[in-house]
Image 1 (cartoon, rainbow, N blue to C red):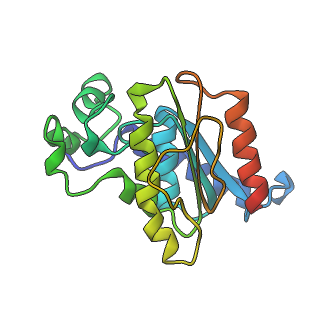
Image 2: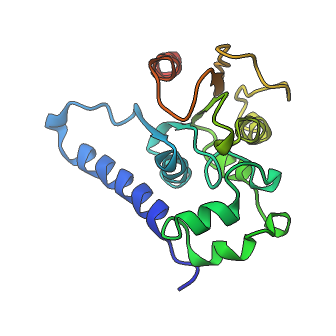
Length: 200
């Protein structure tokens, strides 16, 4: 039906099936209480959806995930609903198409997706030149999701102004913006590992 899941949902479902496997095979020597999921671009969208649905992901990280990921859809900046659903129609359910050029009518926005991850840990990463993914929209969604984390007594981003480049925010909700384009860099990985070290 038009409301049924498509590729983003399938990729998220697949991530949960990996955790099923790890839980069943103790010989894998994985601490299932310390599982993080990280995704870049389209997989960043899927990582957020997996994290929202499966609380076994104790840390959820998106990198340059854009529209349908961490960026606020109602900003209508860069990769919009119309663009992403036209370029990659199999990513989202058909019902998503009703919001093409009508983002203001959406009954939700992406900060609510991020809020579903609470009380687990959330990290969002952006790149200065990746305007397609809307770094400001990604930051604002992360900021606005903070209220849900505070309900659990957790720390979140407390200022609505974006941080400077290479000045990561490391709380229960984390964020950074780095120089460069749409990519996963060594700097990103260093921040992700620092965030994991902080919480694991």
